Length: 430
Ligand SMILES: NC(=O)c1ccc[n+]([C@@H]2O[C@H](COP(=O)([O-])OP(=O)(O)OC[C@H]3O[C@@H](n4cnc5c(N)ncnc54)[C@H](OP(=O)(O)O)[C@@H]3O)[C@@H](O)[C@H]2O)c1
Image (tube, rainbow, N blue to C red; front, top):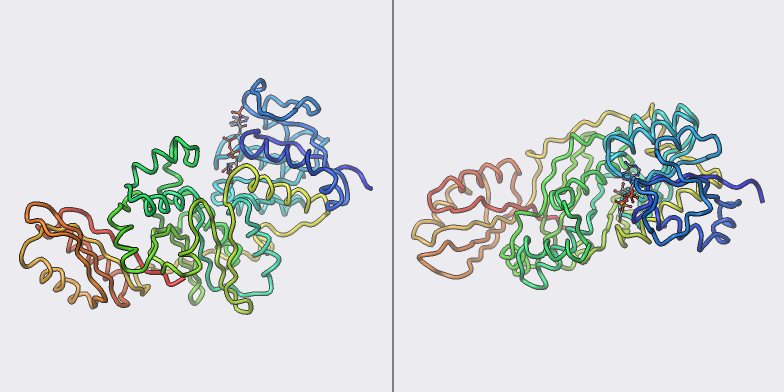
């Protein structure tokens, strides 16, 4: 067996301690697969004295994680601190410039600075691996960069945030509202104390940005994404969606049409029996449209200590083996600038929920607005009748142009009897 592959681990939280556990417990099998042992030389976190449930006594403690970049006893720095700026970004830049491989689980960093980091890695003859950054334990980066490399991709769809999928599943199963379920999820540790990145779709958007880059050979462009989350979905929407045969899912969708790319993260309705409609609870799924493989579905746990650390260690094993790939599947010089597709011009069927005062003429006025925007109604449902209370009405439409749907929803909202911003979701048949 050849020399050990020497690593430093910066960040000893959920993922960092998970990596140490796997490297310790599975040391023999990992050494056999990597062709040499993996040796942890140094570790770093904020607090040296915290009990992390793992034995750190054999590793050098580094007070300032940034110093790992300059250590000459490391082949690879494993960045598990998080955040797109500051220490994590400086450490990764420094390590790559210092000709060390980097493994990270940091989707925010890769989404915002991936192109720059890929250039630095390539210029220094080292790799930036980030399997754990997208869909945790599901090897989706490996699948797209390697297993499906023969294909031209036309679309990637994903349920990319386990917290949102858990909340939506729980809302449906218990009939409770968003805020209520979120509070429980936070108490149970499924959601962060500050859940904004998860529930407003930002976390899923970071992941979609990375997948889109690999799928279409473009520079990651986070600013080109349209992002909305699930905080406006209420129990009524969940009930109506079920009544129409749908589940509500926070979907990331990246599609290429004639060289232009749509990147959107938004709540959508999908048929109950469809591949993505069946993904429940904390599970993630990625559905890829490749021209020779059709649509393989990858699913599994998208977060948590074990699944995420498993992907980090797989990246380390590849590097120890000498397997090195361009960061986004092709050399940086071949990555194109992303040309965004105008979402307004896209066509689809829609779910539109209104909350309106129950008075004569409401449907006539709504229908007139829809007619004026070339929108034809496929189905309609109203729950309850109460002259003193607003009532929800849901309409589903035949295919319409997105910009027309948005305009119609705005005009309906401006009507006197409409008491709440309408909830508009596209139907995705996937
Ligand atoms: N958790 C998951 O399921 C999951 C899934 C996929 C990807 N990720 C990504 O993996 C990365 C790590 O996530 P995590 O859940 O393990 O986070 P975490 O539990 O919050 O751990 C973060 C670690 O970074 C350390 N740290 C924070 N600021 C630091 C500083 N200024 N100097 C040195 N160390 C610092 C912390 O030190 P202390 O422990 O001393 O405070 C802690 O050990 C993130 O990029 C995250 O997005 C996580």
